[in-house]
Length: 116
Image (cartoon, rainbow, N blue to C red):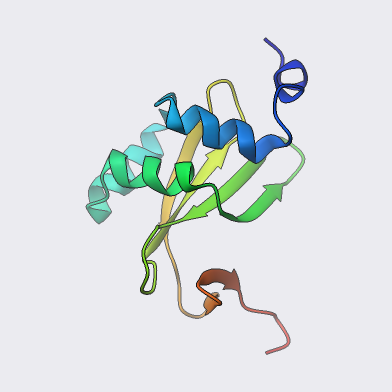
C-alpha cells in the first residue's frame, strides 16, 4: 500500500503513526535499538511516547517525513524518539535532550531560538 493512499484514511501523518503505535506495529532500526540499550530506555517507553500523540517537531529533509515524540512525563523529559513515516512506522533513533539546544515551554520541549 502506498503512503499516499494510506494517508487518506487519517487526518494527517502523525495520526497514522499514533494509531499504528496503539496497535503495536512500530519497527525499530538497529541504531534506535542500540541507543535505547545505551540509555536504558524500554520499547514500552518509546511506544508510550508515540501513542500519546503529541509530537514536538516534524522534520522533512527531502527524503522522508519524521516526527519527534518526547518522553511522556510531568517533570523535564530526558529523551525523544525519532519516528519516520513508513509502513509500518520506523523508529530511527532515540536521543537525549541537550540543554544548549532544547528548552521546556509549557510542558513541551522546544528548540531554543538561535537569537537567544
